[in-house]
Length: 409
Ligand SMILES: Cc1ncc(COP(=O)(O)O)c(C=O)c1O
Image (cartoon, helix red, strand yellow):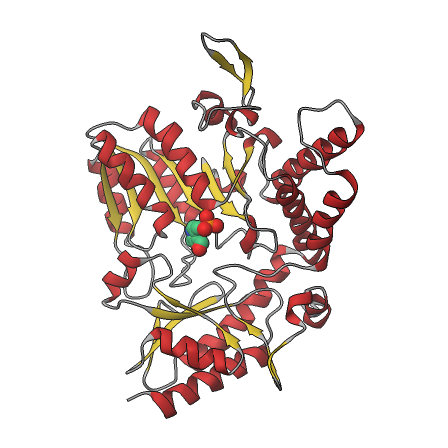
């Protein structure tokens, strides 16, 4: 940690070198929604468009071969990044949302029926609730949601009870909560799910960008995440699934690239993972994701995680002392804090902070059921990343303090 050079990291991100308004530096604390990109990621995409843009998997010519090679190389990078066993276990999607929908439409439709149960949690992002509700409406299966305890952790007794008494086919859980910051015990949940014959899907949209995640040691069946939250571009994400599962799953979308042979009477499917990547993929974005993985690996995921823990522990220690400020979740958390100031709507808080140059998210953060359970309709959220500093946290804290003093009733 001592050689974690946050100034050098910040220098890599062109967008951070601007003033929000005269005399006020831009302080970006909305990384949970989307992170920023270093020059190396932006340049990797420019380079592709400038030097070797062509479609992938289809041309014999030099540019197409070069583009295909660059695109496919990223599969290997992502495989190593999350320690998947084989590179064919990496499917490129448009993001976390599409990856969950892929699993629902293929594995879910094939394996889940009336009378079956899916266990999710109250703290899931809508992306990991709505697709399963659509499946339940179609198939007549039931979704049970693990409740959240006061310290922001999951009700594990419910998990034990439901696994023992219900026909559970899938347990699905957010790894790091995008609202509470809770880092859920995925290894333990996976072990319990497997012991009762269920599979596990982990929403890693807020964990893979921030800490080392090893799908083999966690023994995860399905893992999903997005490029744009990990210094990569929008429009690209990843579904990791164990090879045998992918082999047995039907295709997601039909079209070019995902087929082996098409006749007027019918078609056969390409091999895994291409079976799941119909049409021209997001080539530049996949290449950008590869550059993001290189960048994060160069700094080191353990160092990034430690840096964020230092930042969030400091921030939590300060904000949880403030009178008239509600903080949601426990002290033990990943790098984000959702909060409210008594007497102010979260959108007003975000607007006041914005006038101080501090960008935070406000609203329900796509976790309406969790907000319902907390008895609130909205919260403000500061979410940190590898380039945020303690000085920025101090500016945020004084802006919160000012909002509380000047504006709160
Ligand atoms: C935990 C979690 N899951 C899923 C998503 C959806 O990601 P995307 O919009 O990139 O598909 C997000 C994004 O906010 C998230 O934080």
